[in-house]
Length: 396
Image (cartoon, rainbow, N blue to C red):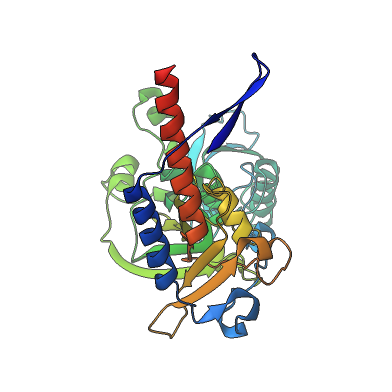
């Protein structure tokens, strides 16, 4: 018998509701099955042994670029393989001042006509001109020369950057500042999927390599006016022909793996990059948990890297309980060096009061909110009233 109060007529009426015998039998059968199937798991959350508990998060391991030694230099600093334009004025009346193009050798010197090799790497253009003039006087070549130096073309390394960066691909980096930090910056920085490990695949070359950073030879006037000092006295070959020749390249790969969050400083030699080296930012492994059972939005949920996730947090991530009386929870956890997973039982009501019951979760945990006799009864009653009031609304 169900009592219904009619507010409009200000009276109470009684409606007789008969539950079919088949429905009662089905309800009792569900209760008995659930009761008989309930078996206590091996462990309770509150008394879980320490070896089965998830370790606390130490916070996100962050890349510390301050520990990466930089070999970078300013673009105004002369570096090996840079193409320079030299202008030498000796002061003679009949002198024809013509600019001379010269490339900086790997040892940091530049071959200047008449004067010979002069160290210029690591200097500004103005300093390099003064250095050349001083050596010219010391070597007795000129009395008071005026020498100017201009950087016509900076040498670049072509570095391939792959993995968890915003702009993967081949990037040209000035050779004087070709290092790990510059390569990551050229690739647009790291994505939110980046881990802390970096692989550097070095493409070292045995023997003289071809220089691919030469000045373009398409301008006829410049080609007529510029003499290449570094290639004088090479017989019948013109400077541009000699510069275009390719030497035999024999690649020899080696791989260096660095953890930029380990606390160890990365040396300048480790961070240095050469032409055709490959840098790969290793993506971090995503860790997740799975929530199922009596929740509104079951599914996989990624664990954050900078905080702990507990049982009540996981239920909230899954939209909360779908049954107001659901309380029983199983957590299935795989433990290293253990063939069978560990089954842990917890209680939602106790988790709200006891921190040990509010279990800290680990990557790979499966959390299921279990069906119980109480939730089954509530579910049947809900279905019944939904059906009864549906029929009543159609009758009136």
